[in-house]
Image (cartoon, rainbow, N blue to C red; front, side, top):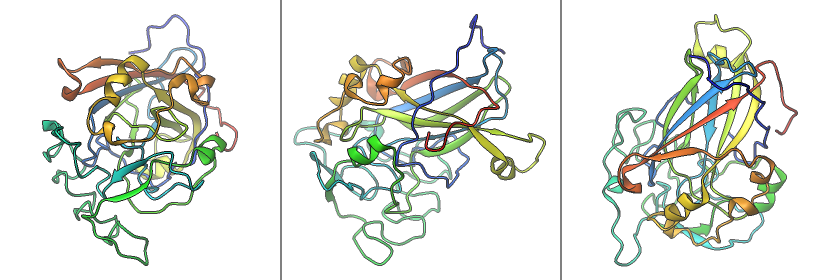
Length: 308
């Protein structure tokens, strides 16, 4: 059904940032066993007439609960840590703080609807999460080793300087967790099963979004249709600060020692303060998960400037 809004104003274009990957995975569950508070993300794409944009590809990516992006787990180009986080190749801290047990939803059960039906301890290829997509140890580069069970202390998250400049960073691994693409239905809707993201130096908690609009929706093959599309919109979604205060006080988010950047301090949020997700609790506590919704208004014919 069309959006019920009386008028639809174009949503502000925001920067892509330095951690986008164009290795496309069509899937609704992007968690791949990453520890964190479960989040069901519902996005509606409409045009300026408030009509749903059908068959658009919604491409999302985010950091994990301790501020790391898949593909860039060893990033920290400015050489400063700003704090450090315990990080294992699963992207999840290996030890809870003293006296703080991991909640039940972090104890290894496979999330329903995972990409391959495998246990949380496996990635898309069915190999151990302690391995990358090609099966080599994720603890090192293509020429190096590194035990998949080791906890490595590295600079928390990513470089604030690179993020602020919107520069594309070089990948450091082959992980693809917390990334995925879905195609909008007749109501312009997509849904993703993910986790609430953490934060990193210089950035508040956020989720990245690109909307790709196909030139030809009659192509049968989904990948070919995606390849024959253009980017019509780039956005970032943010979290209510009062709610996120509770998230930050919850394990495993408490393991991120990086000083939090608030929405008010974030250079991207200041460009679109309306881009805050509408969030409801799925139960009586955060551990039972959250549902977040967002409507983005786009011009399907638009192509933003390079770098956006």
